[in-house]
Length: 404
Ligand code: Z7Z
Image 1 (spheres, rainbow, N blue to C red):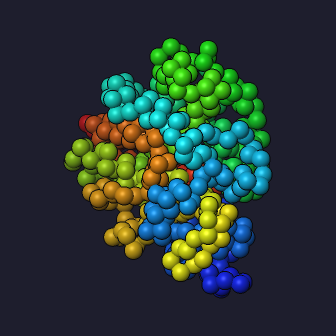
Image 2 (cartoon, rainbow, N blue to C red):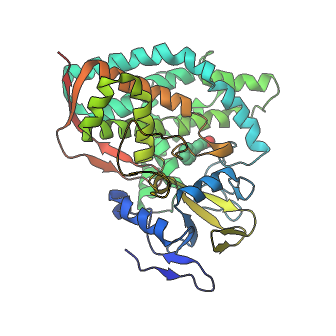
């Protein structure tokens, strides 16, 4: 780990930590502590960007969209200086007022009432999947559960055709890698996703989507004049991009936590009404979305550190969610903890628009497990999946013991 030093010509601490390296992904916690302890803002000398890792400052940044904008991209690339690698998202990579128009539509499509309509179907699908997996006994908790479940319900809710829905995974993997540097990981994920790009472009179009579902509802907003016919496919694309890999890693995180901490699993079984809380705490504890960027719209001071206009700042959601300045025993997975205020879903105007859908998926999967399973055992070494933004596993070999 790097020696702390001061930024040339300034008063800021400097670090040579690489938050996009496999060493970091394998064990991010000592690095995150170093960044939190170094100061409220730290210069990352490898990438010439700023890092903010303390809870208080990450949260404040997320709420202050005027100072910390998204329109110049939420990855390392500054859209003011380079052309985005894909047409920019009019939701994620936008600021008010443009952002609000796309957001309003998705707020409606993914509203609490819409979630209520999905509840029974989603719960039944979780029950069925857990039944099938119990018959197998031993399986891969990632491919067979954390990936299989969202892929079994989310494309249906969108109104996608049956074929090739697993193509959503390599696409999401590429987009989330693309928020980081153009490293080996990024290039490999581009290669992996190349064969699915044409398919994906087709999935956004109105005539591909079932007459009922999130996709059709988005396109219907063209008819009312809320958005243009050019904007609708881009808003569908936002769901296709952000709706699968994120929930896969959220469910994977919860499964991994409950397998590693059997006393928490016992607690959940004793009180299944904690299923939602157990999922939420897994999102805090593992922070499936680890980092992304903002760009300063003016000169600012964070703590005692001066930052110029037009600077990229990397927000460490995962580090904030384990900041001991805010959390008691942050490195404990505790399903009875008050998790309110965690930044695993972000905060402010860009806070995850699909968070209720994610929670629904997480809750019904955990609830199905509590009804049928007595023990979740890890039977072989878990393997990490490396991604520039997402934290999660590639493999989690587990065995489920049925309740007799
Ligand atoms: O609009 C989009 O394409 C989109 C892509 C990625 C929206 C959101 C995200 C995202 C989700 C980014 C979580 C960072 C964290």
